[in-house]
Length: 335
Image 1 (cartoon, rainbow, N blue to C red):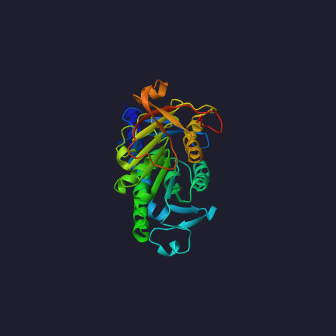
Image 2: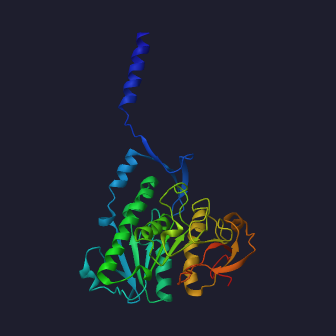
């Protein structure tokens, strides 16, 4: 009996010595752990229930200080020039021109300025139009393997980028009506967060396969009202990408889940920005109107009215759900 009490005391003492890390937020009420594929194709087991230590990690990220803004123009298409909030001197020596339209690009989880997303879209935009392209490197917030912290950092980074845009407009006279903001995965939701923090006045916001894990019941997810015209391209719906509608116009190429020519979820996930890049050159993706995202995912779409997917110009005033088919390799568009 005495030995049993000693053992019980030791067990209780050991348990009390373990750090207590209570759950403070659930990004998904039912599912706590799931595998999420990273940009290199590797699977990561992520925890969608945030603890005190997760929140503490997120608070160590300071986007106002750690985000890096890279400017590309036709005068410097391959080597970026720095931009820094509060530093008007840099605007006098770089190639930024407030009279041109400005494109803002936001990469996804575990990515940075060298992401394939940026490699595809920077040259595509510069080839299609004489614009300012600002690539936001928020890898200090997105680069953590702690997915809960990365989701939290998506919000704080979006608020910070909105402050950068407001500052830039205030010192140069640029207008939100001259902006096109695009994001991939976590960056897609961040694009929406930026828009709503600029008062919904940004002319064109594009969500490219907005992230699904951690965003089903997340109040900060992409919204139709985040910009004057909001568009969503779904290419891995229900897996890495969000399944339901999020914008004014939602496109489900090939049903929105499995893309022709792909053999992995990450390939499907990335097709969204490759389709967008091609649309800037050809404008050739035409969607058929659907009654719901479920009919879009099955291709049973026979309603009147077509709409072009992507492209340089916002389709302001247009809305709906659309289905289209693509080729398995470039050119992806079937016209």
